[in-house]
Length: 402
Image 1: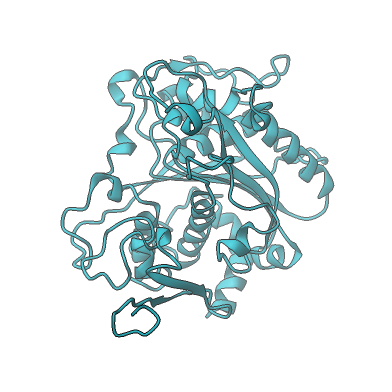
Image 2: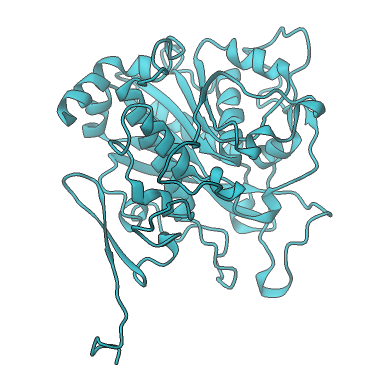
């Protein structure tokens, strides 16, 4: 089965990446190969969440817990087939309405936002092309959240060159909050001296120029705030022709935006959807409040690109009324995507409790990622790629603890 699907992916990767806007692929059942790919890219996003250093007392609070060469191994991702070429660091502006701590626990202005990776030779053969991947996490620092937002033009990368999406009847406006994370730098911090945009463009151009032969794709994936950042980043890459290959051909750029807030106005939607080499698949749970922010009343449009809706209600193994934040959980989104083919086939039930408390029957502890090695031992089966769990037991009858 795995070999058949791998062969299927290599032959139909352009369809999976949205060449025909996923026509006929999003029903029930969903196209099996697309489902697998969405979950695979989603786990790359999860990798950024899991690798984020959230220990406020740490000297490296807000950065990554592991180096590029060890990240996938340390986070038990198995053989991903990708090599990380660049860590992406986003910087925030000072926002006077936020209280961000004092003394040693004061939040940094710059945090690890994601990574830029590229498929190796073996994985590229499986994929049918060389894939450059940008993965962005959701909000982890309170500085990254803003209840105050407005619509402003995105500053041009190359002001002297015409934009690909030029000619719109109304101005393209984007979230000031998301745009500031994308274009703002904070030179007072070592990792904040260049903005997200500049980090991505320079690395991307180098990888494109170094890989002149064969098919290529650029995939930009994100969850929550990372989904908004992914959409804006991909639009910018195509609008500024950063995706131009040395032979002049435009490399296709695909966004997988999962559970993200609104990014811009209707003119942005028209401009983004009109770009020939850009495809956006927006995954939304209608009961996820984050996807409704900042709000249509402020001039924001509900979504960009093709919409895929997933719903968590009616599943007996999920808690009847999970917390609002749990409805927004990335693993719940991936699970619901998997359910559109066959329940439990491509997403393990235990992963729903990785960072949340969603399962009625606690076959693994709630939020087990945070108690791994204490309440539960976690490993990965090298052959199947499945996560394996073994609950620990502390008992007075155990001589080790008595």
